[in-house]
Image (tube, rainbow, N blue to C red):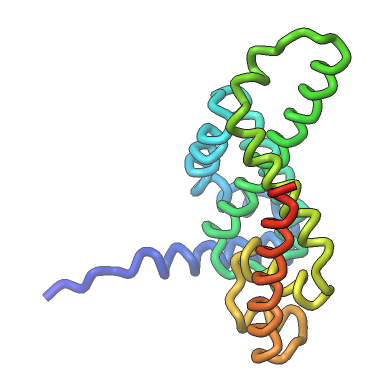
Length: 192
């Protein structure tokens, strides 16, 4: 009888060892080894957002540079998931910055930029993200922290409680109330 290895569990253990090695020693080789395992996935996510191979390759390198500092300060349980969120956020911020720059150049020159017109769909996302960010700022501190950790950083209730020091029942309440308040604020601002 053969037993099938749990490769997902082994991968997480290997990732955890490399993260610990990097955090303890600052060894960029350990970080490089870890990142190299998932670089093709990072590139795929970037390509999905940017639709441009060169820009995606640049983003892969920029995300590695972000990892150098961010991995030292964050407690990461599942590196693959955490890296996916980091990559997605990097791409959204880059698109957002690009959209703002294109807005300025359009207003200044009165010339239609065909790339910008092509980003109409992304502008809708951009507007929604801007509204969500503004609404996040209006939440009480406990709700804002809890919602951010739970939804944006994909932490579980227990992790949110551990990070914030809030009681588990309070965390659930903050997340539920924060989500409701966020939804109300977003709907109100979207209709304006």
